[in-house]
Amino acid sequence: MSTTDAIHASVPAGVRAQKTKQVPTTFLDLKAQHATIRDEVAAAVQSVLESQHFILGPEVQALENEIASLIGTPAAVGCASGSDALYLALLASDIGPGDEVITTPFTFVATAGSIARTGARPVFVDIDAETFNIDPQAIEKAISAKTKAIVPVHLFGFPADMKPIMEIARERNLVVIEDAAQAIGARYKGEFVGSMGDYGCFSFFPSKNLGGAGDGGMITTPDPKKAERLRLLRAHGSRKKYQYEILGTNSRLDALQAAILRVKLKHLAEWTEGRRANARRYTELLRDLGLSNHVQWPQEVAGRYHVYNQFSIRAERRDALRRHLADAKIPTDVYYPSPLHVQPAFADLGYHAGDFPKAEAASNEVLALPVYPELKPEAQLTVVETISEFYKQPSQTPRRVNQ
Image 1 (cartoon, rainbow, N blue to C red):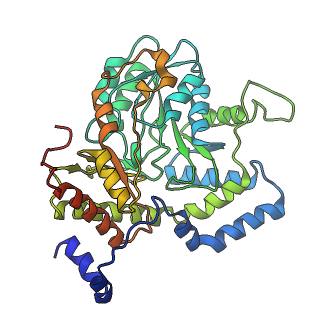
Image 2: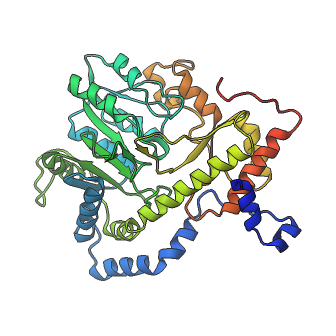
Image 3: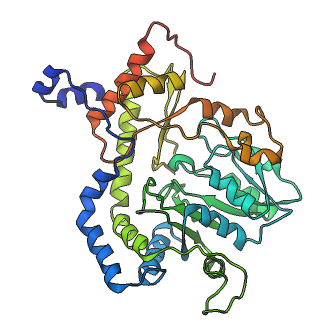
């Protein structure tokens, strides 16, 4: 029995007779998640309120220790956001004006924005069309005498190809800052993302797999000395009140966020497996309904453990398909509709449309489907059947995406 048939068979006969379809009511259902941990979160928040210790302190230190233990690094340093995690890692590496940092244009703005904030120049290279992640071969060609660091992004929760990236970096004495904002818990050849480079940068934005009740971030590092420098930088360069060893900034993780994240961290592995199960089900449904001529879906790769912060397909006539899904009340999103090298904020870098064709093609074709752990199989079936309906319309002719 196919996955499609199995899901149909699981629907009660009375519901089938009414021909009702279950649809995802939202792209990400944080309320469903919160309902399962409401009491734990309330107790953690109340404990912080009773302590009246809101900035850094024991809760933050405990979360840092727990994240370091999960990722497999000696140290982790909490900060105010994932964007600040990247910025602080760059500052700790003494990157600034006159330096170049290689990264991908197919990512959230914070990746390149953090580089620009230091005064360094973001140098973009194209992506691998299959994984959406930075192409290691393109990195090597972009290195110049000014290159100081590489920022690979583990996009959508899928690990970048770190072995060749680390080999290039070690050979050229370059800093590697892993942008793992979307990828906590992902693994590459048995190693957790955030443990392979000089720094790993994580975001606790609410939509992340481990999301807080606001902004928050974490930086992992294998070097305790680097961690100590990060702690100085996040607190105005001070370890003793009103004494400033270096110029830093204000980027401290607050205790309320840490307490909530510590509760959620206990459930992360279960939630991750829920996302992976939903990704497998999407794959089976898309295959069952014969959509490979119109859609490409994420592929599992040996040695890489995908945590599916997003399940992004590549779709023929993406925008029309998205409108069709919206008409059926099915929420979707696009990560990212325009690569960074053609964004006005980076116009001074001198890039133009056509410079990175694989990133540009991805921006025109990607479509993220709901994949949160609480998503029901029946809702996934409705999503895929609605996609199938779109491509069965007379105006649709089979054409392999991105060919």
